[in-house]
Structures are given as C-alpha cells and as structure tokens.
Image 1 (cartoon, one colour):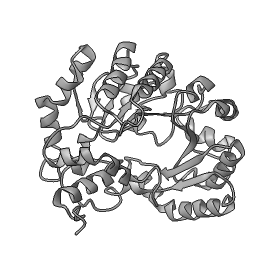
Image 2 (cartoon, helix red, strand yellow):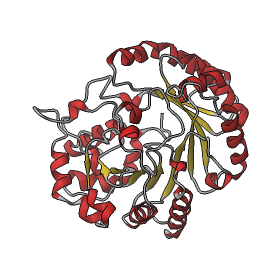
Image 3 (spheres, one colour):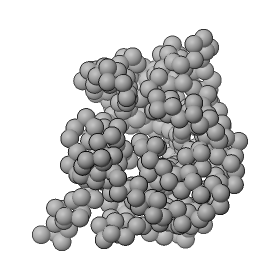
Image 4 (cartoon, one colour):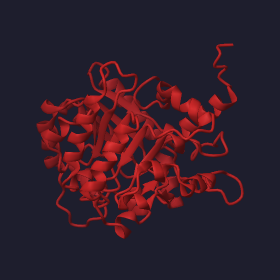
Amino acid sequence: DLHRFNSLKLLARADVLDAVVAGERPYPIDWHIYPSNVCNHACSWCMFRQNGEQANFAVKLPRSVLLRAVQDAARLGASLIHFSGGGEPLLNRYTLEALELAQALAQQRPKGHRHALKVAMSTNGALLKPEVASQVDYLRISLNAGTAAQHTATNHGGQPGHPGDWQTILANIAEALPFRRGDVGLGFVVDHENYTDIGPFCDVAAELGVDFVHIRPAFYYEPELDRAVRAVMPTAHKLCEAAKWKHRDHPLTIFAISEKFDGYWTPRTYHACQAVHTGVCLRATGDFAVCQDRTDLTFGSAYRDGATFEEVWHSDERAALIARIHDGAGGELSACPRCVWNKRNELIAAWERDDLRIALV
C-alpha cells in the first residue's frame, strides 16, 4: 500500500539517495526535534523511560538552540521538521514559537519548489491548543487506548494514583480540529495490556472526526515483555482488520503496520546503516543523535554552544560514530532495537547495487 507510512516515499528525494550512494554526505531531509525530555505522561512502554533518558536528562531545549535548529533545517533543504520527544514537546514554552517559525520558513519556499517543507508534531494531547493545530501540517496525538481506564493504565502507568486526563485530551482534540492546518491523527502503540482497546480506539477516532489512526507495536527492552507483545500481535492484527471493516464507509483511514520493526523482528538485509545520512535527531540536551532509535549514539555537543550545524554534521566525531554502526565484531547495528529507518536502509542498498535496474532494464 502506498500511503504516508510507506518508506518508499524516500524515492521523492532520489537526489539524496544518489548523494549517499556516491559517498557524499547530504544534509538531512528530516529533522526530529525534541524540545523537552520532561513529560507529563508515563507511558509503560516509553523508550525514553526504559533507557533512562527522562530520568537522567530532565531538560528542555533553550529557546536559542530550538529556533536556530528550525532555521538550519529550513536553510539546508529539509523536507520535514518533526517536533516530538524525548518528552512532551509542548512542555517547552518555546515550542509554539518554533512551530510558527517553521511554518513561516516553509511558506517562504518559492511556489513550485521541488521540495516542500512540512511541519509535524507528535504530542500526548494534554496541552494541545487550537493555535498549535493551526501551525502543523501533520499532527498526531498519542492516545494509546479507547477507554478512560485503559488510557490511565497505559499513559500513566508509572504514575500511581494519577486521576487521568482522558476527557481533557478528547476535549482538546475536539477544540483543535476546526483549526487544523493539515491532517490530524491518533496514535495507538499496542502492547499486551492495551490491545483489546483497538476497536474502541477506532470508534473514538471516528466519533471525533480525525483523519487517520496509526496503530503499531510497542517495543520493550525487557525480553519477557517483548515476547508478551509479540504473542498478542496476531490477535491485534485481527482486531485492526475488524475495525477497518466496521469503519469501511467512514472517511477515517486506519493504518495498522509493523514495518518499523522489520530488522528487529525479522532479519536485516544490509550490514551497515546508511539511513543515518538522510535524517537527524536533535535531543533536548542540545546535541544530536544519529536517529530516533539510537539516541545513545550522539555527536555535536558543540552545537548547543554555538557551533554551526555544518561543522558538527561534517565532523570527524560524527564520521567515526557512523562507522561503528555495522553488524561485524564490535558493531552497533546488532544493538539497535526496532528500526524506523529499516526500509530506508534496504532502499539505499538496492540503489547502490542497482538491484532495481534503475535504467528500466
């Protein structure tokens, strides 16, 4: 299926594929910016809670670094600026200003420019306001449940006694929808404790009038919990198909995929990561990670002190870091959890070997 979550959309930036295969280091086409490592939710499967980042680095990006990153992304030809986390991006008081700046810079690109700049945000919805929705081309709210009780259990699993904010979030979404700039969707990260809520979740989405839902598996570092998630996936897929059938005549689109787990749940078909040349992640600590999944592989701490992005992107530090991401002895690739850019790596490898016979032979 050719849709917004299909990684083949990288073909729209064939210029970047050509550059990567040629050994060049093009500037990233998508920037993932974490305005905050602080979060007002405590989702049970949150990778940033699991790896300790929210506890060890409870920080927010300074205004100067946040706005400079937006300017750099636009200046260097990015196709996407995605505000997420880390933590809850709207807990940073400067995030709305950054959204407005990103949208203003996007509008400055000449009409008919080959590559548009889009602005995206992932939020838990507790602080969502109409003015946020009006600045974002793609807005996703991480609901992860179809009932108030399950939402509290999943999104506040690490906060015993939390009263829950289900109704507040639904009210925020309903208030923001009339002001949406682009499409609005709800996210559902499936694990062994919330999967039975898939049907009610889709019902809520249809009632609210959002454009789509995105249902995908949770990731746990703990092997026993990981096995528990895998065990419920066949049932979860059936529940997704039942929801698609139930809402077949409704404009709501239901995306239910596990593609981003290819390479973790299935064998990888490449031996080194090249996708790290196509995107970048600015952490709330003011330095960069090679991707959203390996936020422990960092470089460019000088950026928060004023170094240019060009300096940190082309630095020997980054080159040495990327050289470590392979599957040989001592390589980092085998330590990667799920891989959001797995299909990008497969596409780059095929592009490099010309398995696709690009000349149409």
